[in-house]
Image (cartoon, rainbow, N blue to C red; front, top):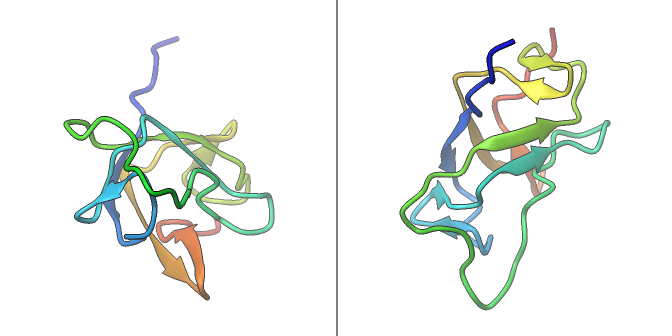
Length: 97
């Protein structure tokens, strides 16, 4: 079985996140979902910026088993967008099967 390349976070508009710089996520890998909502579980506000500023974040795990891009709790979308949905930071690429 070949190892899947983790999907890139193409854009993140959650500017208050410690891993966000100029709409780019720099977390090594995020986790999406809390089973009922496609929240970015990695979203964090902090006074210091985190992550590798030379790297673009990826999706490490997804708890949204009803998403069409989800296989065995792994995201298989070519890339995702993260941003505000109803005042929460969500995966905007989430779509039900």
